[in-house]
Length: 119
Image 1 (tube, rainbow, N blue to C red):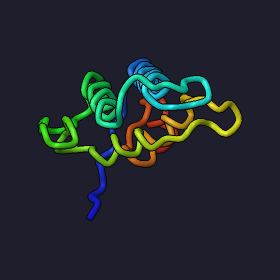
Image 2 (image 1 turned 30 degrees about the vertical axis):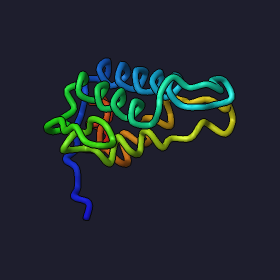
Image 3 (image 1 turned 90 degrees about the vertical axis):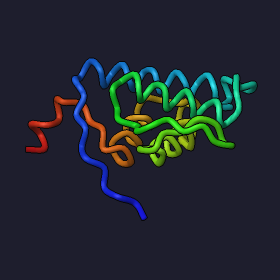
Image 4 (image 1 turned 180 degrees about the vertical axis):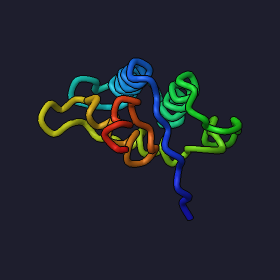
């Protein structure tokens, strides 16, 4: 059962930095045309994604060390969705648009500037 995640609005600069950081992690740690030899395994990728969310003050709950590595008690669905992003079909690279889509659709995380558009 999935519970609705409260909307989170980040300052536009903080949101941009988070998107850039997550995109960089995907480009470095996932296999693509431009990175045939990724740096780490899936557990390492998820740990880096979780750390990026936490450093942006996204509440991921308590950290838990399990067989699959370090996870958070909250927003694990978001970490999984970010880890499952596929390269862009046009560029064959991991692009910020894919990260933004997952942040919004799965994590309900948005830049503050859209708040007035929603209101």
